[in-house]
Length: 488
Image (cartoon, rainbow, N blue to C red; front, side):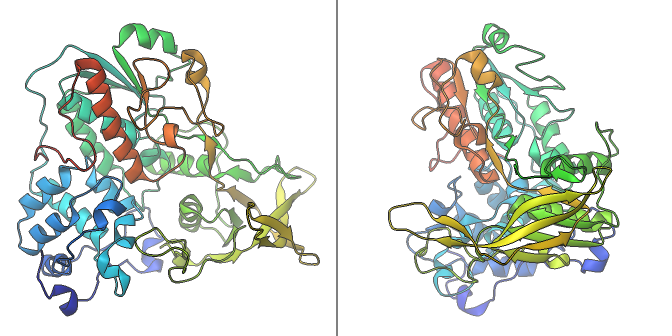
């Protein structure tokens, strides 16, 4: 597998970044591809490890050692077949996935893991460049009609798989273009939108219909979908944003992160947007929330010309290395520093925002925080304790709330009579992804809650298998660990 001694001969390499002062001038992707020789060497680092734990680390079950070996041997077409056998959209995951596969890499026990995500992206880009990614419409149609609600990664994966099975698939999207958070949440400097558009051209050529600007539940009521389609797959995402209910939260300048990011993505695309313009230009920005969305707000704020950017996280600062209680191959909660953090943000941990303060016109001017610590009590959830005498007021013109999401919107669930869990996720067990209403299925964040892009694609693929089984009695669509017919 790869070069037997490769992991001893070559060090880990990933795509380098353009200098900060250069990349902040625009919203373009700023990684610089590795030359083919270097990529082959990275593939050569994949060990003949016996049990490839990277398979279990990847929610898609990607055949990672197999495509690493193909890259090492220069068989890029074979690598593309292997990668697409389990992943519909490696050009997305190769840019956006946090790579749990790398945390499960056997080499990562005592060395730097194989640069799996970078190799994956390079395979996908080579496949597009060489023209290997072609539309493959099904040879026959079943006559069954399936509605997929939501065009994020879960919806797109479910749609492509069901279309491959021969069903007539219509994807409904309430925004003006397909892609979900891929288009309106992820900044262009992480993934330019032509990457989505070229894949959508393939999906449309394969026979998938997209109806954009149609809000299912409002423009089309759910019962109407049930009459028109033989099955429905709900992939709308977990879109209910977590608020920060403290004094001053209604001040002008306290903004939900996704409002800020979606508006800027539309601005970059040259599209119109609703509401008042939100800009970080010449402002003191505080991003509240230390996850990926917070990181995206940081990078976007710098590109808009923010005077300064601070990042607050209520949790304690994680260790720089794998914690002892989170052993390999599990995902470790360790300190992660994104490219946006490296662009100049000041990061603060164990800090809680208590109040927003404004001027007489209702504009945000500062916020008040307190330092906190987490008290661990055996058998109970950790308790947040404020430290007396640590209150501090910070100048702030724009506060971006990147606090995550609390669950799924309930409109469709109410109209269809679907059961939901206490977190407002739609109940649909992994045994068949079907809700309590026959013929209605759910996948992605709307089923499991806010999660990773790789989980969304995996859920869409899994759900498609069970929808096909519901419609036809059995299915040849693969489940995780089975792969698919070689196709790109």
